[in-house]
Every structure is written in structure tokens, then in C-alpha cells.
Image: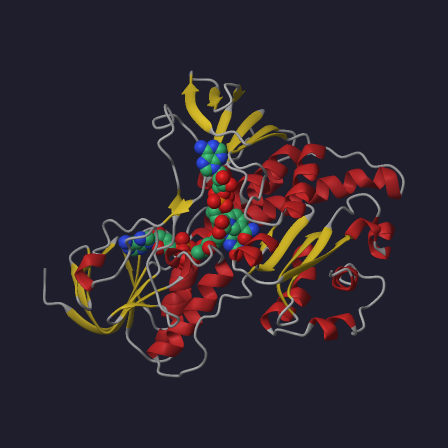
Length: 454
Ligand SMILES: Cc1cc2nc3c(=O)[nH]c(=O)nc-3n(C[C@H](O)[C@H](O)[C@H](O)COP(=O)(O)OP(=O)(O)OC[C@H]3O[C@@H](n4cnc5c(N)ncnc54)[C@H](O)[C@@H]3O)c2cc1C
Ligand SMILES: NC(=O)c1ccc[n+]([C@@H]2O[C@H](COP(=O)([O-])OP(=O)(O)OC[C@H]3O[C@@H](n4cnc5c(N)ncnc54)[C@H](O)[C@@H]3O)[C@@H](O)[C@H]2O)c1
């Protein structure tokens, strides 16, 4: 090993957050080394958001085409996975090759090192035989990997995670999905729409258990309409694979079986080998502790999934922006997570921002909720088939502002934008009640929900 090289910043992990922070710091003139062990760009473009949303787009096209029968005549639809797999391979991921992303990073002036980084002391990072002294500091952006819990018999079977499911070229006839969070429900609906017999197993008493129960109900109803078999309130306890099929033993004694098994039981930050002790970073919980400037220790910042503030691409980008400003001494606001938006891209979509009713009550707020059925709105009526949805708003009565909202329905993620502005900007409920909402839009249903606050 030669002499350590002096640079300004080392970014560990060039996924969504790391690439954004490192690229911008390099473009600002700092000497930046970015280290990535797998693919520059991270989970989102290769195994997450982008390929899964391409799948969803395809599944939704099938279902819309089938709705022609109710709306506009006749249609004959034959599902074929080949164009979906091709689009993911060729358009989204370049067959899981990150050359374009590496060039994007180096084009901004960053220096790229492929390998697994380890922090070996204050400001010091090693990758392979190279060692760097990061004079301004280290940015940790190492993301998360799928949780594979110690379910009896699971290890050693050829189960899928999201990474295998995204790469699939030939659909299996049947699939058991463990976990009814965002990953589980999005994949369940897509594969079911392409004719796979899908069984979904969720330990909580409803799918999308972190969101409003009314949104869970909208999604569960849609999944059932797509022929997904849903088992809630039961946990997977045992797994067998006999070479041809998986059999999963559930906590209620029942068994479910399929040719493939997808594990979607959450995400975990893999921090054990990173050398965090060397720089006094607290990762005693599941994630890295950070302050509102994303500082995790002296000259150490952490961003993205690894902070546990919300596993979303927009969170990683938001936090990267704060770190870039902090390192460049540009000031500006620190992190504020009150109005965190998230969207589950099922059909209907579930958009949500801020607190759920339950979270607001658990915080001791004086809560009122308002709710409306999207299918009963003018636009829902016009839309017809596929119009299910709900808008729910959660008010902190003492302050007269919304602290949370959900918009499940057609384009629920887009309808969310107005609600996100209301929560983030603390727009008084009285103003929301007395503004004009365009007719006949889906977002006009927000007005009904606000008027229903009681
Ligand atoms: C199936 C799926 C669908 C999703 N859909 C959405 C969506 O629709 N919308 C949304 O907002 N979010 C979505 N997400 C979440 C989104 O992908 C993540 O929140 C985002 O990728 C997090 O970015 P990150 O930079 O924190 O981590 P990552 O993108 O995971 O990047 C971290 C990088 O660090 C690298 N790394 C780790 N350790 C080291 C090391 N020691 N040395 C060098 N490199 C290292 C990894 O190889 C990885 O490339 C989805 C996720 C999944 C799995
Ligand atoms: N549209 C999006 O923005 C999007 C899409 C996909 C993923 N993501 C990100 O990825 C994260 C992880 O998604 P995920 O769905 O894997 O995790 P999750 O934590 O959201 O859901 C996992 C589910 O598995 C259940 N579970 C745990 N152990 C079980 C067992 N033994 N048997 C049955 N059920 C069990 C849990 O109750 C939970 O509901 C999301 O929280 C989000 O941050 C975002």
C-alpha cells in the first residue's frame, strides 16, 4: 500500500444519494473520490424504482385495455412479459451495466473507485490497495439490502429478492410473496396482471400496514380483483423447497405453495464491516444516527436509506442537497421530515404525506379527520372502472393545519402534491376550505375531504 492520497471528500456508496452529493461536490470544484462496490446509481435505477415502475406501467396498460369492454367497445388483450423484460434490460439498466452512470460522475470531475470501502480512521478510507485522507470529510451513502430473516428452512433455498424479481425474463406460473409492504404489493399486482398466481403473506393485519387503514383497504380490494390471494395476520414460519416448488408454513398452521418465492420483508443497512467505530459514528440502532445537517460524527455525514428516515429516492436526494450545502458552507435550512411524501404505485396508487391519523393521535395531538370517497366524486363517476380511492386529511385542531394526508386513487401520487404543499407549508385549514379546486379533477376531492373535517 502506497502513501495515502489527500483529497477533499470521500463518498462511500454511489447510489442515489452518494452520486448526487459526490457529483455536485465535484462539480463545485472539490476533489471527490466516489467508491461503489456494485453499480453506480444504486438500487433505484437497477433493482428498484425505475424497473418496477416500468413493470407497473405495463401491468396497468393491460388492465386499461381490458376496461375498453366497459367503456368503448371490444378489446382482445394478450399479456406478454417479453417487452417488459426487454425494456428493463435495454432501456432502464443497460443489462445492469453502469458505464453511463460512471461517466456521468467522472464527467462532473469526480474520481471513481470500484470496490468495497472501509473507514480505517478519522478522515481515512481504504478501498482495495488505495487509501485516501478526506480532508473535509466522509459521506456515507451505503443504502440498504433486503432483509432475509432467519425463517426456518429459508436459507439455502433459491428464493428471490427484489433484485431477482426485476431481472426475471420468464414469468413463473405461481409466486408466493412474503411481506405486504410497498415492495410486496407492487410486485404482487404486476405479476398477477401478467397471469401469475400470486399469494401474498403479511404478518400485520393488513397490507401497507404503515399507511392509513382506508388506503390498505383500497389496495387489498384491488389486489383481490387482480386474483391475488391475500393472507394477513399470519407470519411465514417455515420454508421448504423440493427442487420444483416452495411450500411456506404459516403461523396459523396453513401452508401456501408456489414455484417461486419472493422475500419482501423490509430492508436493512449493512454497516458491520464499514469501520464506523473508527470515527465514533452511532449505529447502535438499525441505522446511522444523524443530526439535522446529516452529520453522523466529526467530519462524517450520512445520507439516504442508511439514515432510516425513510427509504425513498427523494429522501436520499433531499438529504444529499443538505450535505452538499453543509460541506460547501452555503447554509440554508436543515432537514425537516414533517412533510415526507411517499407513493406506493399500485393501481389505485397510494400517496401519503406526514402523519397518519394514528401517528397524530399517538403524539397527543388534538386530531380531526376528514375523508371522502374518490369514486363518488364527479371525476370518479366519469372515470368509471378503476375509480376506487379515498382522500383522508388529518388536522391538528389546536393549530388549524393539516399534519398528514392520504390520497389513494387514480393518479393518487399526483393528487398528493397539493396535500404535500398544505402539510409542508402549514396552510391553514380555513384557507384550504375556501380556495377554488378545478372541476372535474381528481384533486377536487381534496375539498370534500377538507369540508368533512369534524
Ligand atoms: C423494489 C424497490 C422499489 C422501490 N421503489 C421506489 C420508488 O418508487 N420511489 C422511491 O422513492 N424509492 C423507491 N425505492 C427505494 C429507493 O430505491 C431507495 O430509497 C434509494 O435507492 C436509496 O438510495 P441510497 O443512495 O440511500 O442507497 P442505494 O441506492 O441502495 O445505494 C447505496 C450504494 O452503496 C453501495 N455500497 C454499500 N456499501 C458499500 C461499501 N462499503 N463500499 C462501496 N459501496 C458500497 C451499494 O452497492 C449501493 O450501490 C424502491 C426500492 C426497492 C427495493
Ligand atoms: N413506491 C415506493 O416508494 C417504494 C416501493 C418499494 C420499496 N420502497 C422502499 O423500500 C422499503 C422496503 O419495502 P418492503 O416492502 O420490503 O418492506 P416493509 O418494511 O415496508 O414491509 C415488509 C412487511 O413484511 C411484514 N413481515 C415481516 N416479517 C414477516 C413474516 N415473517 N411473515 C409475513 N410478513 C412479515 C411486515 O409486517 C411488513 O409489513 C419501503 O419501506 C420503502 O422505503 C419504496
